[in-house]
Length: 289
Image (cartoon, rainbow, N blue to C red):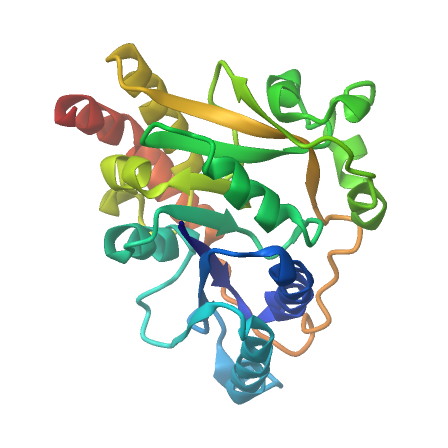
């Protein structure tokens, strides 16, 4: 089984990606199957002329991190040509070009145990149909709709943004894993870069439409597509890896480069464009299948 880990990386996120790379390195000694690390360092959203740090600083650090992936097939890409402006650009390109069995989306702010990749790859081997999503569990989110992928020990905590943002990610991933079980759920619910493993056959069917542009709502789009597929009798399922926990890092999400990089923030612009095309792309998918 071949798994492709797909990462879109901005310069100021590079330190946390280095931490993740060390987690993966620790976990690599459990891995028997081929893994591809496919990461693009997006240098396009910084005005380098007004920045105090040169782009070469980040390119050199990026190349040094590459050495931590000596156990995987490496695709480290530096983009300065506006080809990759956001995670949708990166994921779209990966979907259309990969020959891997599965694609794993990863955001640079996610905390996880080193063993998680091993658990999720081995779990995928237990699934005997083509269209699937496997998600680790997480902590209580900002509303109860996320409870289906919440680890039971966190279901007692309040469902609000304040509690979620206050979580200590180091404490949470220290959670003792005992029995790890693959559990089928009866709906589709996941956050795009939260260590979700998606079958390539599913993603090649849904794709990420060009009209979404660089960033925004690709996870929502895939969830809606999965529900449509299920209505049309496709065998598509989502599973959670019961007994595992991942969490976004808000509490310690510092940016040491804040005063040294002149960032160009187009996130809201990109998301608005994607949201404006969602309904039409859903109808296009209905027509497609």
